[in-house]
Length: 514
Image (tube, one colour):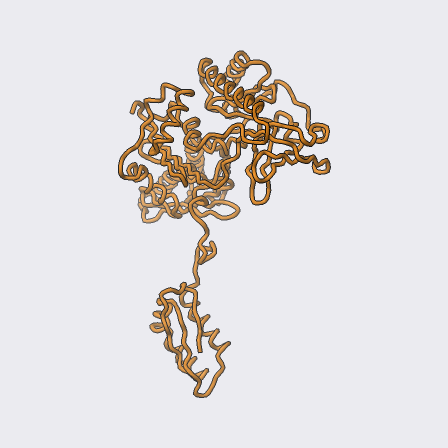
């Protein structure tokens, strides 16, 4: 392992799911899980046939050889470049599952605004090359675009526009200019290219060889378009393991270990074209123990689902996800060195900052996030915590925006959503508590039973016994703690009450039988 920051990409491939873990110094820092959901179409390129043009909606239905027709809006045929670039890079946060980016740049040529009518651009029966911009969902067909984009590692090829862009995350003006000059110099004709964040510092040779690769790919796609006579697939987006290779397997990663021979062969073939020098860093894992167990990743994953995460100092943080936002609470726990409380609190908060930045990246939590740190007296300490959080999140590929700590000790922040949150992917709301996270207390259940009996069972002289079927724990409470109320109730309805435990009942479930 060459560098002092040893990092590995560990890939577990099964036909039902692929899991990719990025491990730095033995710690899992990113986890990507993709399951076969039928959602693997975005980015695919098709030969399509226009079936209907709808002037009223300014859209057209296009047959691309899938069971449902896709739809193409006029704005996805004609777009101005700013929009196009934003749009395209939004797609890469999906395609990139691994690298999300967002770009703007100076425009070498403005495309005309979307003012034309769809009926002037398309006619029924016309053949057209399209790319899936949004997966088909439910009964809706896929949303298509005629602006094709082919992502490489450093560059994205946009054959339909004459334009050079540079990722907004490359902030250094000189570097942006340098990349723009190189692309201008080496690109053929009017083909558009965008330099992705990873291209920062890349030399001309590297960019040229990738450009050649993308151009070769584009030629192949055009040839297939010409050969195919009916709607169908022209180019399939990369599998998650190949995308990880493209986007994560870089100088920062020392080796890649994968447990599927077939994908191992695919990766070697892919690397041969992209980065031949990396092929000695790829290993096929052939151990008997599952690869994620062998590298201790399985334990990390189960930890990443818990609400409570302990800190080394004895404090802990609690992560609660709601519809609107994610709330994170920092607590001192058992750790209260009374000598200098402010110091203790600052230390716990700073430790929490590191863990929070790590968890946000590992769980891939996006959207609005509110963090409740432990209250600190000193303004300087509050500032230190804020700056530490900013620093800790600077390594995160997903963009975040952090506000200073409020009077109440809260920090509000947002983090760009790039892919499905791990918790949502690996868990579902509890059908017992319907996602509230609580059950009725045992005592409340007992009293509910009493009220039900009063409501339903009429007082009858010499009536037969009443049987209450309950969960064993409720039976215990009724027998041990609620004897008096039961005796009173028996008097009131003039019948005997018999309690029957039932192992198979849910805690809140009961049945009253006369």
